[in-house]
Length: 115
Length: 115
Image (cartoon, rainbow over all chains, first blue to last red; front, top):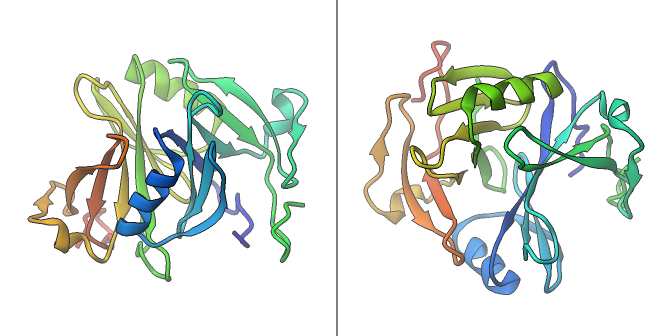
């Protein structure tokens, strides 16, 4: 999570959030099958860092499943909300009603905070 | 799509497949908002290449939404099916019933075929 996302001609997908029934059991299942780092976990969601992208496991009643894209044009969508980790984003819906988070490009300092 | 996936200590997510209602309209919506390359498109699915990952847009009646991981241990899950693009994989379900494709590591030659 120390790279600068949005480096080339293409936009990047920052993270994916998928629905699971039980966060603890889901983290355990993924841990049995794949290699990743857990950067956050509580009873309502967990954040898993893979080689090229982050995967959020969410309880849908608490957090919506979504795709988060990094776009240089994020500011043009409206006022971005700043999150505790320093990233800035807003949510829209795609043509089928899927939740899409649009994030401003960021890089992460050694303490893990976006800037 | 010319990199070797699975390079470091962590596994990579090769692609995500999400459900949409109409492939053409969905590709158009994503094209209006983000920069990517379309590597395949028909009436039942499309494959969009982003900076760090590929996004498949699927009609769920035709193709299941899923996450596809690249794992060095893919062979241990059973017999892998070889696909037209040269990748080899099988499907499992996570602890919540989400479809998960497990792909053997691959790299892509200049013609776009996995080997």
